[in-house]
Amino acid sequence: MTNAPAQRDSPVEAPSSHARELVRVAFPAAAPASTGSQAVLEGVALVTLDRRDALNALSFELVSALASALEALDADRDARVVVITGAGSRAFAAGADIRELSTETYASLRDGRKFDPWDRIWAVGLPLIAAVRGFALGGGCELAMSCDMIVAAEDATFGQPEIRIGVMPGAGGTQRLTRAIGKAKTMELILTGRSIGAPEAERLGLVTTVVPPEATLDAALELAARIAAMPPLAVRAAVAAIRDADERALSDGLAGERDAFFRLFDTDDQAEGMAAFVEKRSPTWTGR
Image 1: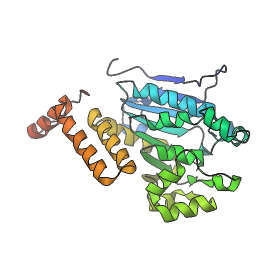
Image 2: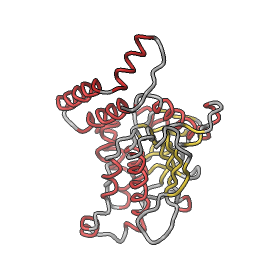
Image 3: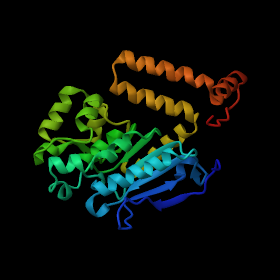
């Protein structure tokens, strides 16, 4: 791979006999006008969910396609940050595909391993940024929370309304929402099915920032570009440590953080970064 790959804008298809463009990948992503004269954002990928006729509802096929797309980017040495968004302006993802889910049983979900693609998404080591306009409900909210940062439009709506159809969140909603906003508010939102707008989501700590609707994608790409300019090994190590902090006891997380910190001192980027600081110049990152 070269350090400046040609832009790719093609669907990553789910394993099915149809050629359906459920997930579109642009890598490197086109640069927003606000970033200046550059045509693309080096190291930044834009992944778009495209079932706009169904408000980007998360069918099993779409989630599998998304997992495959993210895994491919995770394995690409040139990829450093991924922005995930939904096609159109009405929804990031309005939830799971309820028509599809309504025919499932405990045995079919368990034995068919239909939720395994979610585990594959969670295993991706690249930093993920959700650019959310419109609805992010149910599985859509869970997907946004699976990302490391959420840039939300003022018109975004978040919620876990599964209780209203006789079930509960099943793709991380109870766990990630609790860690994001605390037990009491999570209980209220999940047990009543109430949705919240972007301003409340920001106050509760669910989202990173709230921006005007038309600026959502550009703001997410600009954030991604700033992260992509940082040393990639340190970024991946920091992402892993922060995620780990959500999942382990504090003492375990601190030990893991320290080990990851120590390991970075065997990298070229650490030596370059500290040398550049001492020499008062801009560093050149190699990802080694």
